Image (cartoon, rainbow over all chains, first blue to last red):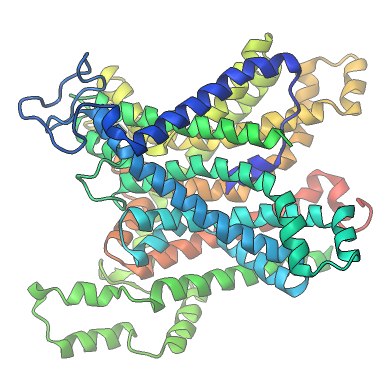
Length: 282
Length: 314
């Protein structure tokens, strides 16, 4: 979870003059994410070509006016495959973040608010989760869950539980010390009610920014597992798999590997930038 | 200090025991039996009785708690069981495949540290604000690049377009350049990010102004006063970097077709060879825990303020 360490070291505040200039990148980032989501929702609106069926005699065409990103070894439009693949990668990332968010925040909330022995036990479990490198942990889960898009997403999500739990716990501990929480307990609030009304909403802000960051890392992790061949089976246009397929045509068709990678980078950069902006606004 | 040492070692042992237990439950106790997968193959023409015999041979018929005890005892003695797929002890697999991975990973680490250091110093000392901003945003870009894609792009550019690194019959040195670069760049990114922030923070401290007022040049102050103080946050992610390095090696070896721990891991997953995967997971956990232990113990030597962790700081 190197991104948690990066996440918790805050950047020095930027001056006003820089803020205006940075807003451009923020707007661009939201635009990139919006386009990716639109691809996932209605791929047919963005490309006239099919994402899975190739046209004979159209193989390995270099990028031109009709095929912006070229075509692959059986005549499928590469851009169409990227667009139709958005649903796989994005829904996988959403599942992963939801798994990590729900699992991690509940563990962190319990650990931070109940405290005592339960806190020690939960944090020891988190230590164990953190002690195994993310990829190896994901592979251990995939080996028992089996291959496939959903299993890969669950495996990636489970890896992020530890990060969410640690962050949520530290936020809860910070909020718990606040006067209004003490006051709520003092005026007779039940434990569960105070937790739900006061502690949870006030600790969620930072965690949501972290979730945005995790969304980007989840896309990276899912594409890595797809590249290794543990995700969706071949005809499916998954981004990591597209790059893996293009590997065999490096000498003849550079566009098959280059463009899917560029799209992944753009989306990950965009989500990281959005996460950064969410963190700065209180 | 001794009490702190004992308690930290105890904590590390507990984490490792829990990691072993979890990985055992996950990988050995749950279904997905590697022995059945291999020997039930009709081509082998084995009768169920023969398969049962093989299971006895591997100890797979014993009750789960006995298997747990046995496996733990063997792990403690440094024996990691048998690879069902390869038919050899896991130790033998590791002995042949660990050295290439270690070489790749250590070279990757050295270059990552060099790249991160140069980048951080350049981003702090560069003459123009726009150049500093550009250099400071570079790690964020590097962190967003998929490792396997980076490897493929490097092959594409340096081997196929520029023909600088031959694919066929490369010398040992040539064969390592691209994999090491692939591994080093993504590791350098978080390192550079933390180092840049840490340099920024330390630079605002009073002792830096004092050193500057005494007439020291900026690079001199950075090198002699700031760097030492800025290194501590970097050390705290050393364990995480070790994990990233290992995961990066798995992917890099796959991209470049290098035989090593990465290839073994990939095949273990494909053939559900759980004993092999468990050994690798536990080795990774041991590495992570040991590195963090060493960092915890070394940190007070670098920063004397950490010598009294309880009390004074509050």
